[in-house]
Image (tube, rainbow, N blue to C red; front, side, top):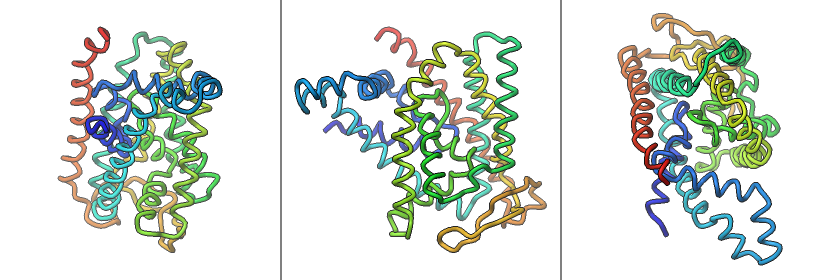
Length: 314
């Protein structure tokens, strides 16, 4: 058992639970990004299946780098569990501070992804503006509305898993954009406490992730290779437009009852701290949280840049 690999998986799992921090970035910093992509590519391609038909399970397991994926995946599950427990507790008691931290993360992530654009032109600018407009509209209509419908949870899993291979973007960010962040994370915590319906939500989400990975991995890889500048511009626009959803002080306009009989917001309006009706606004703590969010991504970017020469040599 490789304890170091499990710890790296834990770090990736914690990162994927936080909007604005990509597990892929952690994989790159820790030196396992290329190996992870090769393993995923082998499973999604024909090599593993062909080896299994010709030679059996053990050679196919080695071809898929199964031990690596199993230990890394186990670490990610542990990391996700730890992060979800902590984040859901903080969201319940200090929501404005948590959303302030996420706000800072997305601002710095947008800057990071925007820096990857190597050439600006009318097409690139239009993709950036289009991404921002679409994301902003999604935050205003709350497309999935925090629904616990198995079909919608499955759909959110399909979309969120695409972030596994999107530079600088986490699956949690996509869940926030879809309005499903608290639903999915609440269900994961609910599984540990035996909450009714939680296991079904988690299972539907997991199946959606598997289907989405199979459907989108090759498409996204092709998109980045063929149209890198426009793809990065679109992602940057998505992040900028999503900031409307991450504003720390929001009052509910409409609500609904969830599966646990709790009243949860469906549509919300951004307000200034003085008009916040959700409890203590914690203005100073929110400002510090925003700054901390900004610092995290810039620190990760600095660490990643130090790794680049080593990765090129390898």
